[in-house]
Image 1 (cartoon, rainbow, N blue to C red):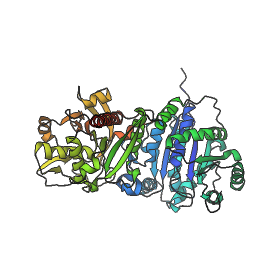
Image 2 (cartoon, rainbow, N blue to C red; image 1 turned 135 degrees about the vertical axis):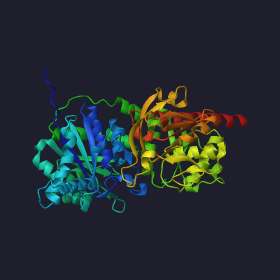
Image 3 (cartoon, helix red, strand yellow; image 1 turned 30 degrees about the vertical axis):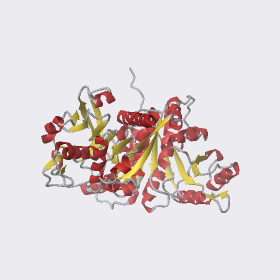
Image 4 (cartoon, rainbow, N blue to C red; image 1 turned 60 degrees about the vertical axis):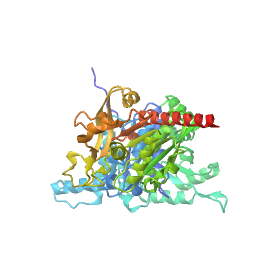
Length: 551
């Protein structure tokens, strides 16, 4: 029997100009979704120009959320978009930084791999960039590899990336590569018109790097009339059908349908010389979008965290609530609560009108007492509670202090000399000195106990979830907690690490050491979020009924 022919991938590069935060990741994800809906196998990768090896040691205020893959890579938050849109897992190979590229090249130089030659940006750095750009496409698994180039055209940091793209376009067949340039068409109120000059300058800078874009995706607040499209096409040297309008959307999940209307996928396939006459299968996506835009109910959930000023620090949690809300045909309103603003004196005022509270992940001691105060209030008042990573650890500390009676209980992360170290440093972390890439990272198994809230939520007893932490529940105190009603219902079968805690006497009280938000997608909302939102909805209905009876 003849072996199955390996796929020969084609490559799409997405660049950006004028300003950052235009949404390259959303455009890349939307195009990938449309191509996937046509039956093509697609993956997306992100190339970031910063010198950090990865974002693992970066402050969330600097970089937003650090997204963790199954294989333990700490990556850019755009990989979360890729997974949520495509429902396909990414890996270390899907995120490359300048730091990692330089590290690889310098390591090779130290080994003597370059035979004494002078190591230079061209060809050594660009060769390493090209190797990574083509790596996924050489596996035989994909028809198309989309590469998002971080930063803006014109940034000093991005120059080697653009040179690598230029070389790839030069070395591969003409129909094997495509460059999509995302740019801005601002509207000047004083002039009452759209301005194309920023786009013209952006394209010119890309041309100066030796790259002619094939398609322009133009972010705009107003529709692009035909005369504007013609002007852009003329001055930027692209065909008019390659000028794509990208209007501001009320949700990122509407963008694939907007790009479908603009025929971005058809244009990309035509320019890559790919024949595809399959009908797009977007029924499930449209159903999700309809539920998202037409909720029949709503809940308000408090997100208690340290970095609430920058919502991107909790990007995956926010998106998980969107998925879970649509699943419940319910709009989830998030009340952002800075944990440092919470005290025992104001916790009632801040939380009493909420339908549920999620205590978010984080590091360090700031805001810890506020998180503990929030957890005590929702535990005592039977408000649905969900704690993730540090949120679970704070739930354990709160229970130790206020139920068991160990007033000095704490985590050794915050108090190394605490009398009751109910949260302790993991054994394999005690000799770790480097901060980057050394936490417990990636997917690990968890065994769920029968007849528990966790088993009812998952519908199975063996699961895998992603981790990012150094500290763990101290099993020396497990018996004390379970005797007082806080049960460990999810255990890592390999090292006995407590992964999940719950309180059966509470309507919904769940703490998890892992990060379930990292696995929630449009097509597969995470069950923990779905059931948490459902519990908040039940609590909201009961609260309204009680008020109605009193009235």
